Image 1 (spheres, rainbow, N blue to C red):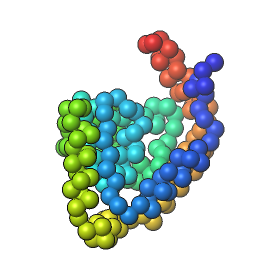
Image 2: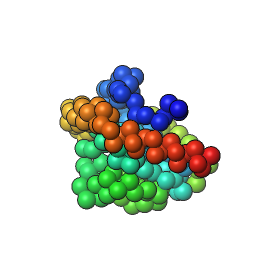
Image 3: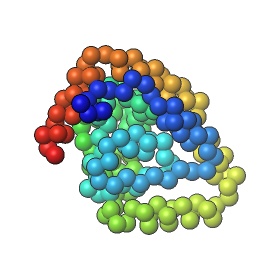
Length: 183
């Protein structure tokens, strides 16, 4: 049986620590997302600048997998795009193109995949020329780290409870069956 056939029973401490470290960073965080990288959509919510491939397919597959959102995404996503749109993306498991992500305000630009890293690097160079203290103060004013930490803790608690439910195991088994059939 595949390791993916059953859901994990705990949220890895490394992931929680990474998010905590990201929240503590005073410099702006730059993210880019290419094609079908499911799961990274959550991390993009924690970035200050986001560049996505035009043909990216962002998905937040939690409910499809019998799980609840992770890493504060249940709070962060509605903050960005409103409850109705966020609920559709999470609860219905709707896919979102890179172009649609820009139109919803989830990304700064949708670009050909070969232009993602150069665009992110150009933005980083522009930020590097700015006043570090002004950037840090601006980021603190614009991102409520305390609210995000609370949201991460709430998501983690809900996810741990959901991981123990039979429907999570069933959804994981169905996912593995589909993956094996398409391989």
